[in-house]
Image 1 (cartoon, helix red, strand yellow):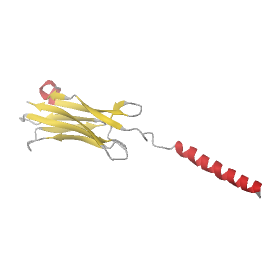
Image 2 (image 1 turned 180 degrees about the horizontal axis):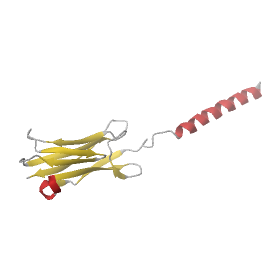
Image 3 (image 1 turned 120 degrees about the vertical axis):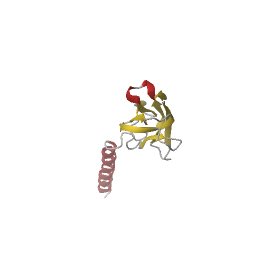
Length: 140
């Protein structure tokens, strides 16, 4: 009876160990990797100095695990986006295109003033923290 119990215990233990090892191979590669801050480049831009007044902004993140500095792609688990804030309610600038961690903004015809470009993304932690950074676009 004792040998039967040992054999049963060994089979159960090996099954549990196998399940743990198999599940380790299918875990999220971003598990434990936390976005700590974002930098938007360029930080300030004058639309007059860019071709057709179109400025492409890029979000780069600093992470707790390698790669430590990488583009923020706004995909799971770092869901987020860029926002263009037209503070006066009038359209100063509009989004021309957006891509993986980038946004291209152009000044509206005849508009002048500044807009704030904000990149925000989830940090991938248990507290639902959102990390944000700003840049400024000046229109003539």
